[in-house]
Length: 464
Image (cartoon, rainbow, N blue to C red; front, side, top):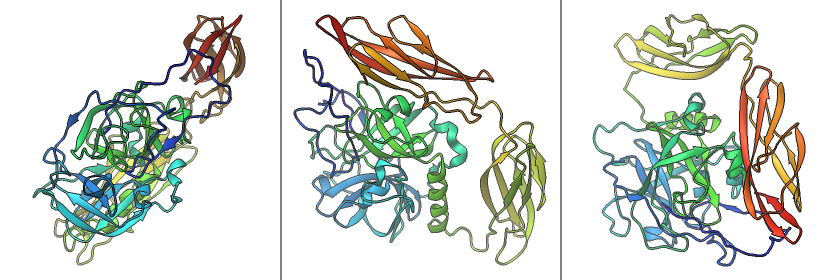
């Protein structure tokens, strides 16, 4: 786990206009080290060792030929007796893969090596560089049971109904067996970051790589004092006890902002399908819950049908529903009207004549949602001291953005979807801000830094 301070290079000369954009890498053990001349440099400044007894779901992935202790290449999370969730790209590295459970320190050992039976990458993941565009989640199925403590309750993997868990402002737990700094291959102790902030990806991860908010979660600090490093790929991002992401990529060098494969969406839905398919078979003779939903697009109402539920050796005696708005129901084919249009997580629990149960959850959208909040996004392009701000990349689900309000960071303001601003001849860094507001009064803000240098009689500026 990289716990590092980002120390950028400093130059007194004006920056080159054609300076290349930062490059993203995936933090497996095979990822390259940063260029000693131009990349960020890191040093360990915080964090703490962690122990498997406190996090019994954590597990290391090994690969034949790996340079790190025991050949460790990635980190992963145990979510069923023989099922592990990790990053899809961890499969792409050369060398046969195996799992290693129970060791606090891989340089000491003392754990159990477990053979891999199957490694499933998300069907939309495109190896070997699919992590750059999304779908970076994978499921490992092992040959034998993973020896977690008796009676241990596996952590839940998030799904599309858990989007609130990855909103900017949330804090996450990170765990990993990876490097503690660039170029290091000796440290093998499990580490953790106990409170790691989830941030707005359009203003942070969006400045490098190919960040896609639908499939990625961004986290970190501007100074990079906590973060992930090579060997942490696939490691879990945990919020409120739920695995909401798997470590996917970082800017070249440890620390700085990083991206996790987003499990609070369709990727998590797929992962849960695989966990259910390859996980514990359940109680012999237990029923299987299944239902369909038919929701109106004009009114906030849905009808449900659980007739697809089944029981292998008996009959289902009850159908209990939770509609996601603190209301409940019973029966095979109930209908429900919500107080307002929206997206809800519906849960069905079926019980058979022997008292055995099974539960199925799905997310449904009822009615036409009005007044959803917009999302602010903008670019900055400068010609010397004159900068053009373009907010047309901002979006709104209702397509009704009404105003664009700008703060340029030097005490001046502007309006309009696009605008220009001339900065004073001063060497400093400004924080520019765009606020978009829709007709319902919902608002969103985004910020970007503009760095200016005093060069002769005018400023030389560029957006970051």
